[in-house]
Image (cartoon, one colour):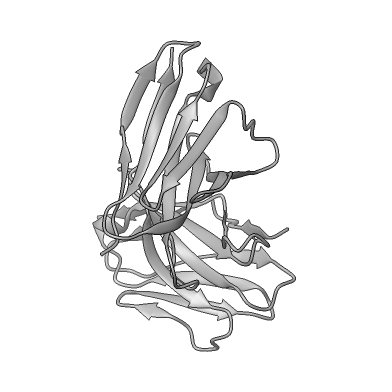
Length: 117
Length: 117
């Protein structure tokens, strides 16, 4: 079974600064996807960024980028120029092949990010 | 973009009654929908995978007779909590994966906060 570990329950960052959220995972599969989701107080899950395991290039989406280290099974999220609206819970998620063809998501426990004005 | 609507957003029910939660994909067809449960300040735990036209696949430890899932059409899945008890109080979230392309991510509903009194 796959596991996803987020070792930082809480993080804080000064507005306009950069913060990195850590995520490690365990899998025996070679083909999979990794995601970072944001869950603001509204509880709506929002996809921030995704990475295909077969791609060596790190994914980027505007101020969000990842550092994907496949051999180390590490997938960290860097948020640059942090904004107040970035304050939320961030979940790292893994998606592989469930055997039933349903591509289930396995989530980490989350990191609560606070942005200090 | 892909929109998943979950209804109701909040529901309070008496202990012993049943409550139905709907998950609709508004602008795409979803062959697979997922139901998650999220306790306060915790991660999302997959309860079951719902495939259109077939029986749902439940995760270990989830009572299929208590959490009835029906996925009768390509745009609607329902979760019915039967004989609800206070310990069933939680935040329930659905997600739907568009039909056809296996590489598309799933999109999340807004969630339903269930309180059993």
